Length: 349
Image (cartoon, rainbow, N blue to C red; front, side):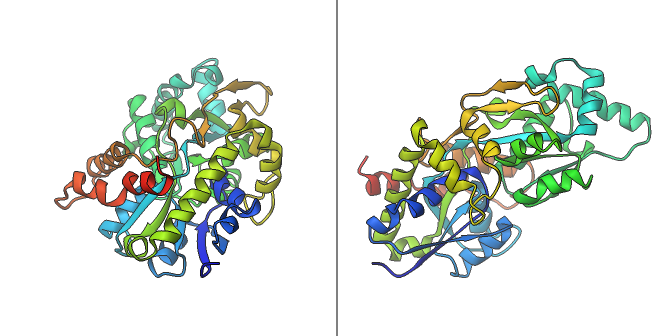
């Protein structure tokens, strides 16, 4: 058995491969002694990874780049050889904002592509009435959630400056929405479904409907650890890949929901967890559901293979939005942090 490997994660459905690999013994079968450590915020996970308290982490893909460049915090070169999957995010708003949207557009639940344009009308009305800007939350400044929210707003002709954007940890967005601290958010599951089922908010559009097969979380490690602990790194990726294949089988979902609903993991009722895996976007009052089959994609279409073009897209967004201001070779950085070559070696694919 190896020395203990501590992995930080946050309560999201896409942490499922970690939970399955732990609960079904995939880590142990490969001789790994893994401890999963649940964290509230992404910055906590990043800092503990940087300082070596964690050897690996369930990490937002853009955090690989921001941490390697030292943006918004400590500077430490990171890399990944495993992606937790594709898609899985959505944008939700409070019931009161949804009522304002319904007043300017019909059947929005069945026409997610119209939601941003409807929001633009609501914003114009609020400006005319002298009301404050709407407040949207993302889970971290360097996140797919921020970039997807920006794309959705732009699709409706809305500039980022027309709304207020703040950071709220994933597991706290529903509470923030219920307490009117925010008016909407972009977050991963189950926190959109959980709000809808609880009657707190309404899911407007999924990440899949903004960008089909967008990259999501990765297994982040420091480049230093990856170079020294090649064997342990390979076994981590192998165990997680095995878990992803297990998750992809629908017959395993009842057991998966049982695992994820445990308080030490995601800790919400199983119904909210089932929605993402079933591709269901449900209206909280009319009790109707729209099917988005690839709402979350944990395994198919090489979902677990980090792709250099995804890293390049993320870095381009960071430059476009002014998050990277120094001269950087994004081609070089992309190949430093995204390591599909290691994935192929570890998995022999």
